[in-house]
Amino acid sequence: MKEQVESLLNELMIGKFIICRCKDSGVHAGVLLALDGQTAILRDSHRLWRWQADGPGVALSAVAAHGLAQEGSKVDVLAPDLVVTDMIEGIRCSPKAELSIKSFLLKERVK
Image 1: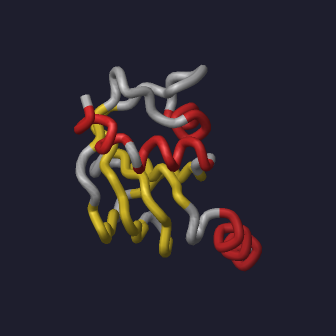
Image 2: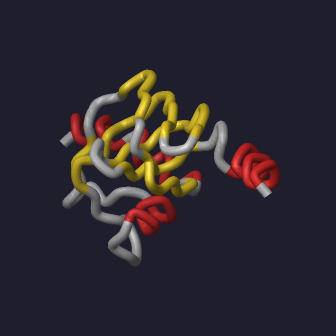
Image 3: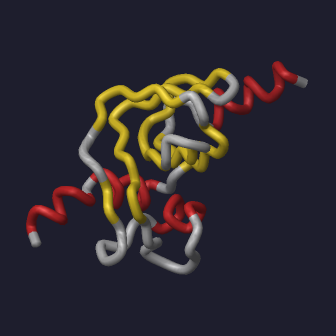
């Protein structure tokens, strides 16, 4: 069973842009490089300080599906490499959500 889970994890999540909700270190969005238990390594990640989905829904699942609304969201600067030791949820992002999160700070500067 463990081998099946690891195989699915590699296929569905490793190398993909995800939202990573953590117990103590907040919410991050980036490319998942590796996962071992609750320890995750992310590349090119941003911390989501506050979020509002740019579509129906209010939870991180909606952000992963629809992206961030400019109004009501707050995103921190890029962290090239990040290790978190308390990941409790990983949600794969749609291409629209990935672009929304990656371009959020650029849009903020244009205002």
